[in-house]
Image (tube, rainbow over all chains, first blue to last red):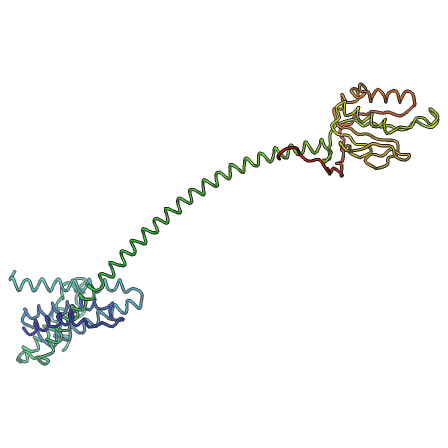
Length: 110
Length: 280
């Protein structure tokens, strides 16, 4: 419950306070969002599995965002940023789909 | 966290699962299971890292989504603007391209016209230069060569005719006019080309051609048909007069056909007063 409140609060803050993202970080925002999405769905699945843990969630969230951004940053420096972004998104996308499928099984018992 | 407890189902190096398969099968962070396992063994309740950590992280997540959405929304008008600018530019370039193509076609037509004009001009030029050559030969401005006759005339020896047998300028003029009449196309006396303005006169005690004194014997070269020229010369009044000169005064009058004569140009062809009539 408190997590949902926090989520809504964050969205509202992002939409209405219009915090400015530093120019050099802007290209990594979308990939960071995808990585965060992966961590969130992972946490949700763990919660439904009954093994959720605050600490693990926080750590996985931060490290996901950080590593995804780092990989893309590295790719940009090497001149293969576009390809690495695609790779990261593919891997994270697979994980998200699988986790969502597991969540669906929990919710609909199917 | 120790590794042997973390992956009980997968001993290290036993079976290798492909990268993609692993990505597909291990979708949940294994830490959740590991930590839950630890908890179960330790018999502890679920611990937390402070009440506020979870909501804070979720709020950050929301913030990121919000900012991303906002940014995409903000960028949209600009992207649309750029797109329309690009479309506009494409249209402009297309128009410019069409204009250039039209100009190119026009220029190609122009080039074709100029080329046909050039070939016309070349034809005209050839005709003109042929005509110029003909006129130059006729007027004596050009050197001439061809078959013809060589007429050699000389004063009679002093012993014959008592010194009366000298060639006069009128005699030479008669001979030259006879040659013209007999069909000669170019004539030179002692290498001096005769033109319409060349004078043959008696000055002092010598005959001058074009104001140059000559001494006998005089060699007259005439280009024409070598077969008919000598006979036709004798039919002219000039030829007749020279026959009588030869007979009565012992003046030398030899006519020989020549297969190849070369006559120089008159270096003084120049008109001071005459101009072409009418518009040029």
